[in-house]
Amino acid sequence: ADSIRFDSSRPPRKMMPGSAPPAAGSGMFVPTQTAGTVLCCICGVSMQPNPANMCARCLRARVDITEGVPRNAAVVYCPDCFSYLQPPRSWLRAGPESPELLQILLRRLKHPLARLKVSLSGAEFVFSEPHSKRLRLKLRLRREVLNGIVLEQTHPVEFVVHDRLCDSCARAQANPDQWVAVVQLRQHVPHRRTFLYLEQLLIKHGQAALAIRVASAPGGLDFFFGSRSHAARLVDFLGTVAPIQTNTAKQLVSHDTKSFIYNYKYTFSVEICPICREDLIALSPKASRDLGGLGPLVLCTKVTNAIALLDPLTLRVHHLEEKKYRVYNFKAALTSKQLVQYMVLDIEPESPEITIDGSRYQLAYAQVARMSDFGKNDTVFTVRTHLGHRLNPGDLALGYDLYGANMNDDDMDKALLRQNLPEVVLVKKSYEKRPRTRRWKLKRLPVEEDLGNKAKGEEERRENEYDMFVRDLESDPELRFGINLYKNEDYRSEMASTIGDDVPTVPIEELIEDLTLGDDEDEEEEEGADAGMVE
Image (tube, rainbow, N blue to C red; front, side, top):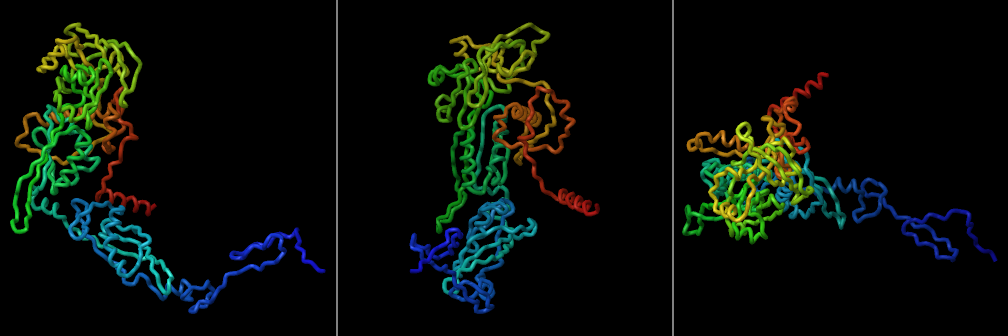
């Protein structure tokens, strides 16, 4: 009998999709299966069969799934607060080509797409000039046509931007005094260093951008808002960066007895704790005992939503929250305005350098003399300090002079009676040479000043406080970590030759380019482009 044999030397036949493999050991030949094709009923092109019997090109030519979808729409924009109108009366802030703006624009097309049973599979912005008042979108629409066939097609939509002031901005433009809520920020201290730091935090996080105006007041600042929610958000932010105590009040302005609509003016009184960085505090016996024997002399090293107290003789640190601070309610015995400059004659480290809460300390014994005593007497003080890692013989340091200070503090008097306190408490290293023009700068809030009630010498005092704040930023990287520093375009490199080697400066890596768009820059770009074409 004849038998069928397979040649094992030949390569196996490639299986086609949909064909079943031959049974093992059966020796049967299985023919391959091919997908069937038909001709398009319009153009005759070979294609895989579908319910419409038309190819994709002919189907798109005869069926338009974007029919009825609007190609033009309008959106209302407030140029003062950078917000867009969300009908009927809501205003939402959104940046250019941001996801928030895309969501606002797509909501305008939600009802037409739902009525036409068209689904949205994708959307993206198409570039348009900012001054053209046009926003262009490219949509990808999907729709079912002709017996279950799904088509997908791109569709451009152009939005015309109409400028119109929102209600709060319109009231502010008509009369700046038509505010709804005010935040009265106060701190009862003889300087404004805390407000200088808070100002930079507000600028970085944009918390004061919605304020109608910012006015200077005795002991603080006043922020006026057109909405109560904006003022409440500022108060919540202040509670996260500073120990504050808040009181609220409201005053009835007008009301409608028929519709029961009442108009109020709201006032948020925010008082910041009167303890600032570098303040020297004398703890009462009760406070020192409750804090685990801390002190009695402590330095305030950091102020956030809690107060960091450092014992400069033992390097113990305690964080005191605002609620617990109100229990003791202690004041600063000496503030930074009473710092005295000393010359370091000799220093001897006592213990190795340690790190506490991100700051470095080292206990050491130092011999110092007041700069004002040079040429008058030979008074030298031997003190224990926490700045052993920073000070060297010949350096200048700022500290509190307990030997000759005239203090009116009961807790300090009790501490002097109970134990021997140091005659000098060193606070920080001082630098003799400082550049007046720096390669970086800070942004400032547009604060309205009451020139009629300004005291004599107030402007000079504020300039000195601002210069001290800038020096603190240069010498303390942790302090400038939470704020933005911008490059100063007016700074010249030859100015750096007048700066000493040991003077701390801000690294250029920490600086941000200050983006300024104006007509001058556009003209320069056009001139550069014309010059390039000539070449």
